Length: 173
Image 1 (cartoon, rainbow, N blue to C red):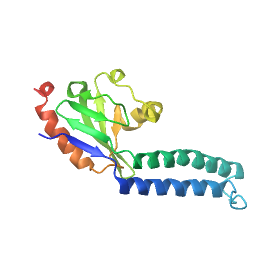
Image 2: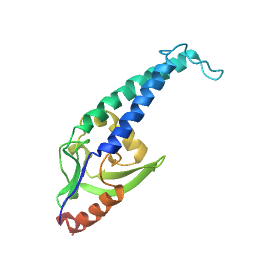
Image 3: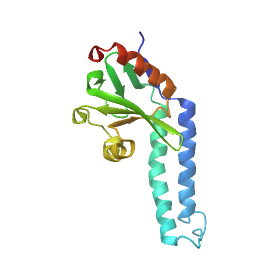
Image 4: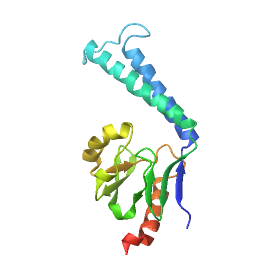
């Protein structure tokens, strides 16, 4: 039985990069980089300026991350008889015995696979996801929210692999 492996999708990553650049440009417009700060009867110029700076910083960082991912040919997600490893979370394989439940969650047409761990402290995150882990847990109701948005595989394929490998793992008997 072959492992399920997802790599970064170049076309999806390019689209996400372009969307991030568009938000950076929008943020620049909001701070007045192309002329006067846009006026609004609903929002103060200070709020518009703050949102503009947020867009520039957040989506600027996102753009750099997406462009970096364009050149990353390593696997992003592996689902195997031994467990699940998601590169964005950590380099550590999470064994099936440590996964108590797997659910799906969606928000605004974005779908996620939610891993519920028995001992989440044994599998700490790295990078940006480490900072966002608590918020993601409260929002999605699980310990790890896997996204396949920028990969060459689908959520349905990943769920089929999870069903296949969980049913044959030693911990499921």
